[in-house]
Length: 308
Image 1 (spheres, rainbow, N blue to C red):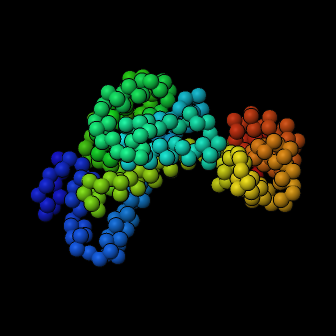
Image 2: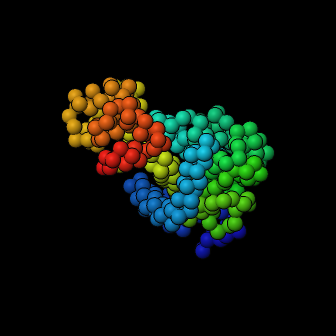
Image 3: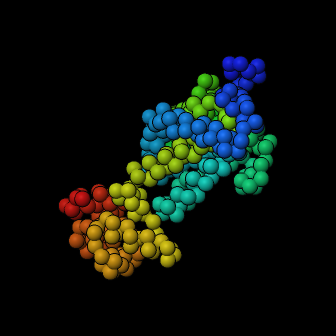
């Protein structure tokens, strides 16, 4: 249990405590309310920066799992589950990954994404059953919970460990030991919220930063980018076709027509076209080099003696 100076209410998680800096927020002007929220939001990046070593450990476990044919599973409830579901969904169009690489398990199921199903998060066995149904040895299961002890998430992590999966917990409760043993604990110190208990605010913002940083780092390590360009994307509409041409221009310095011809010759495979243009080898040889380098553009270029 923790107490905040000057406040008598005792709470079990920092996110539930009253914030002494915002006790008069209901007396403020609209602009000052927004200034107070913004001031609290400024503390979030520092909280994320403090856990980057642990986040790197989790990312390396994800790379290991995906490289070995396994999957990454997100488990959460409420805000945490919705953020996790969004991150998993966005990886497919952004990095052209198989839709089963990152799987989100949200307490209450898909209906809880748009309408709260509050009691679902209290079902530890529900989380465990979800994991037993979908997780295999060697997978990585990442639980997300502001309090650090949501039963649905805890039950899922316990079941994952018993199955031989790696586990990580993202929590906004750094002062309390987690109720389940995990391989990596990512304990964010975001403190009390502007509105006590409203974890959609700083806690949610921190978890969003953690998720996007984590999954993007995993994609980079798996060769889904070249430099800072999204070279794994597929051009499925006019906007994306334009983007693929811009990426090829940026990466090669060549003109539109040469890039368009290379894309057509590579059956719209941006990576193959890129390796072909940067190395000068035929498209078929570029594809072979990419396969040998497990999709890493720089690895393929090194194999072809065309390091960039």
